[in-house]
Amino acid sequence: MLLIPCPFCGKRDEHEFTYAREAHIARPTNGEQMSDAEWAQYLFMRKNPKGVHYERWMHAKGCRRYFNVARDTVTHEIYAVYEMGQPAPAIERENGR
Amino acid sequence: MVETYQRRSALAHLGLVARAAGSSRERAGIIMSEVPHRTIVNIRGMASDPAFSSAVQTATGLPLPEAANAVSSAGVWQILWLGPNEWWITGPDGEADSLIEALRANFAGQHAAACDVSESRAIIRLKGPKARDVLMRGVSLDLHPRAFRVGQCAQTGLSRANALLHLVDDAPTFEIYVLKSFSDYLWRWLETVARDFGLAVEA
Ligand SMILES: [Zn+2]
Image (cartoon, rainbow over all chains, first blue to last red; front, side, top):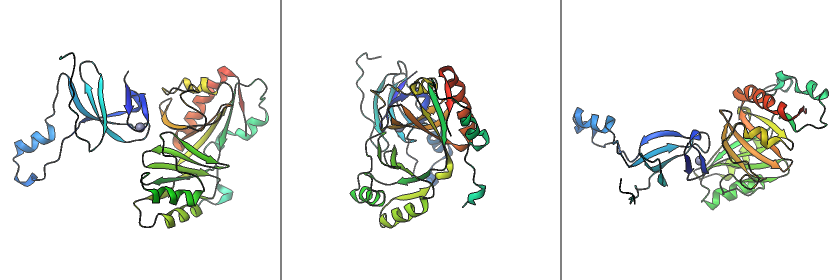
């Protein structure tokens, strides 16, 4: 079980949240000029890192707000929680995994 | 507007008034009741905008709680924090229309909204020295008096139903707001748990 710190409500059990996949994916503004392959790249292809992953969570049973989380996919350690619209913080990992 | 003579509360079918008559409160660790028909007005706006908070204060006489999970209350009225830009104003039955009218007049020119959600929720009141023990079986929230204090509220999952808990006093008394469609289920779940601690029903 993860304790996820909602930026608005504070630390809550992971069961109060829904996972909303990778963060910081901007919809292209030039969709008409893109090839199918490029569009598919935007639509379907996601990072799958072993380490820090920037992702969105939604506090479904609480304030119902989306926010961003930087989480280690190996240890589940949460390095940072930040509001929508904020840039991804650089994460220095000590163990260098 | 529902005709008054046809109006039934969400848990009316459980016959709580009749059950309360035959229910002994002596040695009860838990007293359960329904709070029927309370005005609930949902408001949205920017807490950081002083015009918004003063608009709310003018209409309700209550300060807008800006801290997470905070409640401001006076008498029968309270404002419950739901999120960084969302609150419920709750009060006596039948007050929603005039409150919304006052709020909307004060919100003129602002990015703000008020709407009546009174009929969406049922309210279950759980009172008595064992109230925390009952809730602890269904929430992951820390209910220790140090962590969840009188005059605070929190939205959370209570036995898998989305609910808002408001700790009203240190009896302790909890008011549990739940969608009406979950209220029968949640009442029965609470009652099943409360039997372990000695249950009485109050009208
Ligand atoms: Zn939250």
